[in-house]
Length: 227
Image (tube, rainbow, N blue to C red):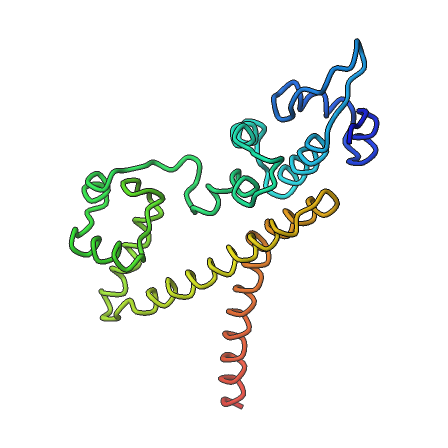
């Protein structure tokens, strides 16, 4: 289906000037030129405008970062991998200004015991974003393990975290696969919102609320016993 720019404005509530700016900045593809001053836009334009607005509003993604990621889009963002691409850095838990180290640099910089690091890598407690790409975030996990060792506690609880994190990641992957199979022109905007809201809102909400409830129940029981 072809759209006039007024159709895009009506359907997305994004001003014409903003849409033209997105095209100029390379966030949106050029429209089809029917004749002088007559341009037509596709379903892809509509999807991308909704996507850009959502990402800016909820995740504060910059134009440059979006342009970078959208350059590699395929099938109008119809796959889960292309939808998630601009937020891969968030998933990696590494900030944009993180300094990166090779394994050898990492060991020297943070005085990491090599044998311990190999064990943590094998147990997938330390998981660099790439095979030879470590950051301060990885060092913070090594420090945590050292705290465990300092007081004589085995880090089995962290291994349990890994076990359950893997199970959760499989559920998330299954969800994304099912959503992609359900995708059509009418529900696409809702589907990628489900992906984002689940990964970056519901997950934190459910996990933190469960922890809160557990601690609250324990505290309540302790106070009851003191009465």
